[in-house]
Image 1 (cartoon, helix red, strand yellow):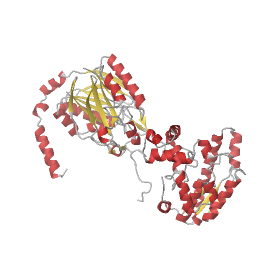
Image 2 (tube, rainbow over the protein chains, first blue to last red):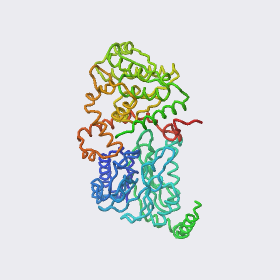
Image 3 (spheres, one colour):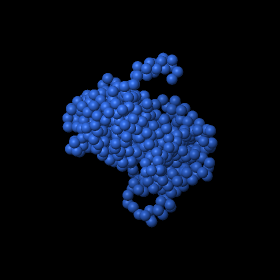
Image 4 (spheres, rainbow over the protein chains, first blue to last red):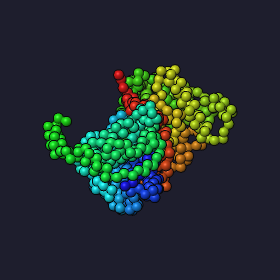
Length: 284
Length: 270
């Protein structure tokens, strides 16, 4: 299958404009023969929303923007970021990512780990998601993560245990520090996790980060795809907008799992029992 | 929208007393325009710090607006605060004779910044802090000059709408003329805020209160009987003036950046 990564700078608070960009990039990717296009975290809204978050929230069941994207997903599957608010929990908004394919909504992931500290303040504005789960897509068993979700052994492990062959992390990661090699120092943090997660999960890891500047924070770009051997298959530009097209074959997952038997030897029951005990004793 | 003026007076005088004390100052300096906001601030400051610790600067442009100057003096006398009058016309005229313009907004901004420059000069001369006099209405719609009248060390009335400032003014005993006359920025003869903005403060405040405080949508605000065109205008003024309510964003490079993740309270004591 062919994956497209759209590394761009969403307009802050302008859903209409971002929708147009999404449709345009979907068109380009479909014409290039891609089966799936991935956009960054909060790609429909921009990142530094603060009090704008409830104003740009969408209900996936009813919103016309969603309907438009769902229709377009008949041509090409799409993963994008948005602010979710449903009639069941009005006034509660989530930092969410959706996967649409074949005209259907396949999955919504709500960001679980909301960074709140230092320069981050997501928990002041968003409610937290409660689980990580893989889902079956036409292109294979997939798991979604949003930015900080990816920087955890537990989230990646949950998707691995749930059978994910592709882990897709959408991100709006601002850069900090200098790597000394034309990138922000923090780009290395994401690549380190990408490499390790791909290697030990024997799965593809796809990371789509954004670019641009919002209120002084510069988003680092540097989206990437690691293969199930922990090998870097493709990487987008640091800082600049980029459009990555890359062919992957899920056969590589099967062959990696024959070579390295992490999946076969995995004991999720032991992990679950340990976590239950830890939660019970309340010493965590 | 209704305030309890007695309670608000208590909170605001406590605010001034505490903030001035913690910053190590006993004195305040503020611009006295003869209008309602600066009158209320003069009243609050004189109660919080004592009248002798408050200096009201009256900064007319030549002989224009003699009634405003008289009203400013009346405010000072009412609250017993000191005053000093400085005519700003020599420096303003010197500047505009070298760089002429017919644009009234440019002239108004220059005058507002000149006044603030004099206020800060006097804050250093007097070992005083500049007390801000911008109310919530003008802050939200951006009806003020950045680095001019919007500048200050602390602002006691920035969370009170213009109509709420009026309620507080009555409690503080502000002179009647300040209460009854139409608010003006004093930028040119006959100018009033409401004519220039094109909406009355009552209307603006009702719209702002519903949008900002009650977090209603535009449609909901319109449903409560307010004119949709007026609502749109207020929303647009609010959006366009966001930059006036922020410190300039700093481009983040390092792991510790002022304003991003180098965060300390204004009032840290250690």
